[in-house]
Length: 427
Image (tube, rainbow, N blue to C red; front, side):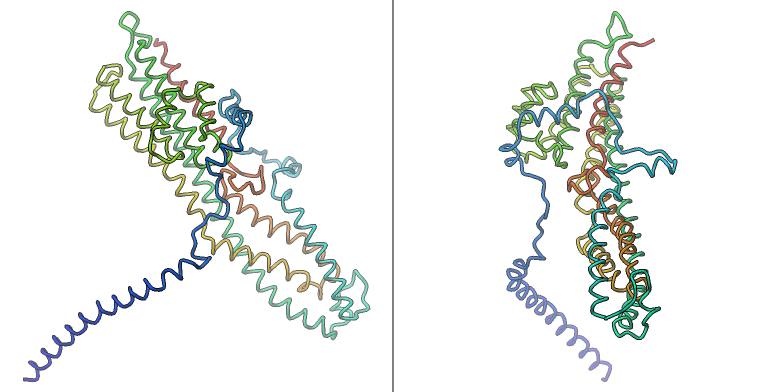
């Protein structure tokens, strides 16, 4: 009987629990609905880009044809240059470098902090009433001075803070460099997938019946058209995610591209008809290229097994689309705000406390110390921030370590013709 009662009590408890939990969840949902409007109004909950790229409408009103032509000259020139700044391993050569280095950008902060530290030393000496000279440690002259005694306590706290700051800033730089390196690999992967398509089409283009060593007119026209469309795809893709080339997405920018032969007037008119954001219209060129290849297979302009060749082209196009899509993912998730905010506060607090914490032991020499600390600690933080902006959209520490996308575009442009030209004649 006791077992039956226990079973009945268990069933009753389970039924009560199953009824209470949904009701509790419903009450919590109602509470969330009531408070959601208030939460959405909080500033920290608003997902707003503090430094957004300029809108297409803004650029259309401010950009000039000369500025657009300057951009086009950068991506259609003959000299490709280097994608990142190179260096010689010799120490003497590295010491001679100045502009574009972290030292160049952090020296101004170091000078400001040294001036502030000098003023702090004068105030501390006046407040403490010390009689020590500039080059003498206050702790060695008057260790019983109440101000000096308090500063020695601050020095212990600051010394513990140094280890924490050193660890965080080192780890932060490492994480930032990993993102920069990953972004560089993505850029090269896009170039590789485009070259895969170029060589695939160049090796399967039909040949003349009279002279099998040369392309047929239809195959040559296909290679030229698809090459132009994939080049336009690559250019407009980067224009959508970089501040430097964004003006090409405007109507005036596309018109200048037509004049320069980068796209045709028909392609521009078709882009204007598409119901897509201006930053996403570059995808049309990839669709047109694959469609043109499928049509060429049906007309035997591309020779080979149609089923296998169609599958390979689709695989390469989908792989290209996937790599291109990861660019926005990398830039959007580069570093959480809370992490960057904490490291910035930690480094600034460490440097602000430095002249006060070191005054008891170093005296006026703390001015020199704060300059050295600023160059290395603040310089490392600036270096990490530059790593987090691989395409220089933030325009922070300009000319440091950003990736030159113009060089990448020039290399892809060259790759779009080297396979076609290499197969123009067969031996």
